[in-house]
Length: 350
Ligand SMILES: CSC[C@H]1O[C@H](OP(=O)(O)O)[C@H](O)[C@@H]1O
Image (cartoon, rainbow, N blue to C red; front, side, top):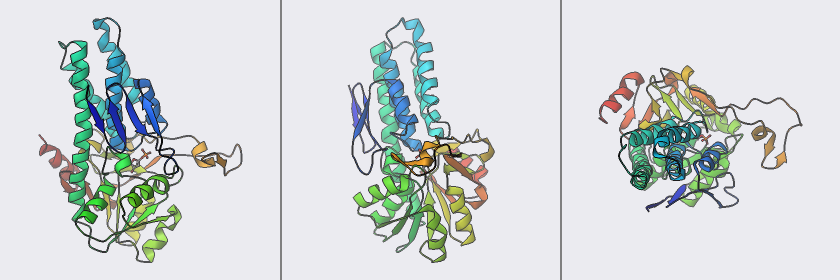
């Protein structure tokens, strides 16, 4: 059986192993998943998170679902639909989850005559292909995005759109990595990104490991460092981009876009075309996940708010297309009007 390994996940014959992103940066520990149900839990509980990483993880979850099947062949199709539906129910916003599962399901549907062992090998190859393609896609995004980064730029980013949010290399952090690889000296400002702290815990960890200049700030400091002139551009990731360019990303991104517009600072989204959902006309149609109140009332095991306080915890917000300078993809940088430029990028992929 095949194997695959990256910073985010490892496929090892009959299991997928994730670095437990809930424990970073304090501990580097791993979670092993041997069933599709365990992969569902790893996505839902954010052991693994980030749109492309979620998609790749679900693809391996689909393979595990096929491996679990022990009933009569005529029951396989119903079993695989249940596997897909379960994995699709893990988180609602990142469209890469559904993109990856639909790709695996199309392959399954196109191979009715395979033996069970041959089917598993075929699905396994496809899941590994999704992972390998993601890394190459992120490097292309990085190369395309580096063209808007000047030597000496201060770059503000939000949440974690890095190697840990993808299979490797990252999208927004891929742009930063590529700029550095081209010899450009950049100063990165990482929003801590309340409440889940992906910026404090993951982005600063990733960039320090890559010896990239990173300064951690609280989310409420973004406006002030823009006013001080520290920021030359904002680059963030995305979880779902509508056909008109409205983009869902981690909560707090919309506020950054308003601040960037106020200060005349370019605001870029970096994302693969697998994050673009052309069936979504605009941002109003993007489902926004709401997560547990505990993410707000606690930091780790430490309570920071009164028991029983009312909370509202939307995990994402939507930045309108007209506040986005460009959408950096593996096919180039889309510019407004996005309904035209994004559609053209899809045409060039077929
Ligand atoms: C490269 S996609 C990264 C994207 O995913 C994050 O959300 P979460 O950590 O909840 O999965 C965030 O929106 C990032 O921008």
